[in-house]
Length: 235
Length: 235
DNA sequence: ATTCGAAAAATAATTGATTATTTTCCAAAT
DNA sequence: ATTTGGAAAATAATCAATTATTTTTCGAAT
Image (cartoon, rainbow over all chains, first blue to last red; front, side, top):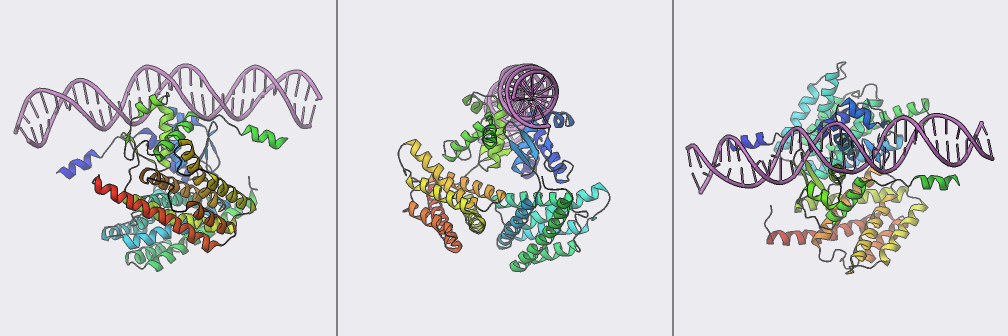
C-alpha cells in the first residue's frame, strides 16, 4: 500500500522544457533537422506554441547530449557531422561500451539478466525496416533500450551517461546516412549472441562480439559518409 | 591583417548565463555550496541581481557538468557525494584519462608538446597550499589546465569533454574533503614525471604514472570520506 | 569590382509579472 | 499519537514584452 502510494507520488507533471527537449532530440536523431542547421529560436518557439524560455532550456539539454552546439550570442546549431567525428564516436563506443559491458558482467545481478533478456526479446520480436513510421520508431527504441540495458548492470551512472550520449550520436549517423539503418546482414543474430554471452557471464566473448558489432556499423557508416562527401565537398 | 580582424571579431559579448554558470561552478567545486544542498532559485537570483531565466540556463549547464542534479518541478540540487560516486569517478578517470593520454601521445604534435611544457611550467612555478585565496585558485587553475592540456593532444572532443567532467568531479572531492587539497607528498615531481614521459612519447610509462597519480589521490579521498561518514551516518 | 561604415532588420538574451506545482502548516478525524 | 485533507505559503516554470547583440543590407568611397 505504501509502496503503491510512493509510486503514484512519483508521477510528476512533466515540464514543457522536457517535452520540447524530447521532441527535438527525436527530430535531430531522425535527421529531420539537418546536421549543422542553425536553429532559429523564434521559428521553433512558434512551432511549439510556447515562449522562448522553455525552448532555451531544452536547447541546453540537447547541448549536453552532444546533439546541438551553442555559442554565446550566436545561439544554437545542430551538431555537424564529419568523418572525424564519426571515427571518434565509433572508437569511443568501442572503448566505453565494452568497458561498461565488462563491468556489467562483473557486477550485474539476476535482475539485470532478466532485463537484458526482456530487452532482447522486445528487440528481436519487432518489425525491422518496416515502412510504417511507428515500426521504425518502435525498433529504434527497442534497439537503444537493448544496448543501454546491456550496460546498465555496471551500476555506474556517469559511464552509462557517456555511453548513452555516444549511442545517440551513433544512432543519428545510422539513421541519416544508411539507407537501411537496421540493415546489418543479421542484426537479430548479433544482438542475440551478444546478449546471451553477457547473461552467461562470458565477458571476453561478449565484449568481442560487441566490438565487432560496433565496428561493422562503423565501417558501413564510414563508407556512406565518404561516398556522400565525394558527391558534396566538405564544408 | 585579416587574421587580426578575425581574432578581434571572435571577442563576443559574454552572456549572463555563462557568467553565472562559471561562478556557480567555482562555488560548487570549492564546496561553498555544499553537496546535496537544494538550490533556491529565487535566493540565488537575488544574489546575482538577475532574473530567473539566465539562472535556469546556467543550472542546465551545471547539470550537464554533473555538478547539479535536476528533477522536473522540483528544481536543482548540488550533486551529492558518496563513496560509491567517488569510486566511479576515480575508476573512470583511470580508464578514460589514460585512454586519452595514450591517444594524445599517439597523435599529439609539437605544438601539443609545447603546450604541455607550458602548462607544466605554470603548475610547478605556482604557490601551493598558500593561504591566500588567489594562490589557491591560481594553483587549482594551473592544475586543471595541466591535466587537460596533457590529454588535449588526443584531438577527440567528446573524450576530452568526458575527462573534463570527471576531472571537475574529482577536484570537488579533493577540495572539499582533503585538508591539504594539493597535499600529495610530491605533486610537482609527479606532475613533472608524467609530463616529461608524455612529451618524450613513452606511452606506457606516462600512463602508468598517471594511473598511480589518480589512484593515490583516490585512496586519500576514500579514506577521508570513510572517516567522515563514520562521524556522520550516510544519508 | 571591392571595401567600408552606418542603418535597418533579425535574432539572441533578459526582464519582471503571472501561472502552475509542490511543500508546509494546521485542524479535524481516527 | 497518527493520519488525512485542505488552505496557505513557497517555489518552480512560463509568459510576453523589452533590451542587447549580431547579421544583413545598402549606399558611398576607393
